[in-house]
Amino acid sequence: MGSDSEAEKSQQKEKERKKMLALAPIAKPLAGKKLSKKTLKLVRKASEHKCLKRGVKEVVKSIRRGHKGLCVIAGNISPIDVITHVPILCEEAEIPYVYVASKEDLATAGATKRPTCCVLVLTKPAKGELPPGEQEKIKADYSQIVSDVSELTSSLF
Image 1 (cartoon, rainbow, N blue to C red):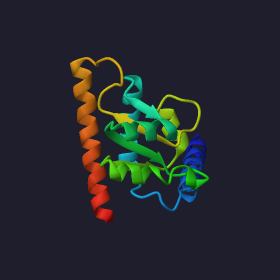
Image 2 (cartoon, one colour; image 1 turned 90 degrees about the horizontal axis):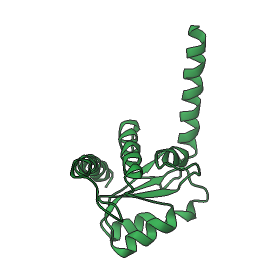
Image 3 (cartoon, helix red, strand yellow; image 1 turned 60 degrees about the vertical axis):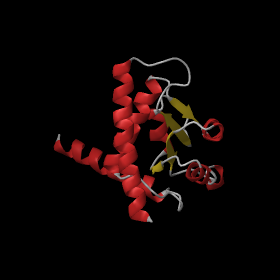
Image 4 (tube, rainbow, N blue to C red; image 1 turned 45 degrees about the horizontal axis):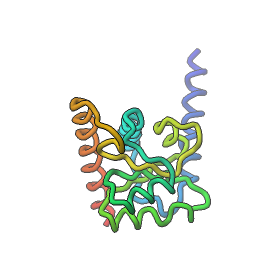
């Protein structure tokens, strides 16, 4: 029985290693395990409350329209040219962005079956309003992650 758990652990480690090998060279700032988990949790909450823009086209459109939020980009995109312009747009619009290791994990958190290159977590939904309690929870999580991301970014540059 103990060998099953050992086999599962080794399989999990192998998956993690493959994810890290598939990362693009421009995937900086890359979220660590803990920040990645927090970020994907925020993406899941935002998805439930319709505060999420999925895919490169939607994200770019939202940034150009002046929406603010947190941009989460997958680090294992191939070809990399698909997302190379997104960090530049984010920096120009002063939107914090962070890379996570896997597009599959990002899609799962965003409640889609299709792997997603990037998502933009908005602070409020595009249409309608959220109950005040839910709005405060999302804003608190959002501000916590943004501060972590800015700390991570400042350590890079």
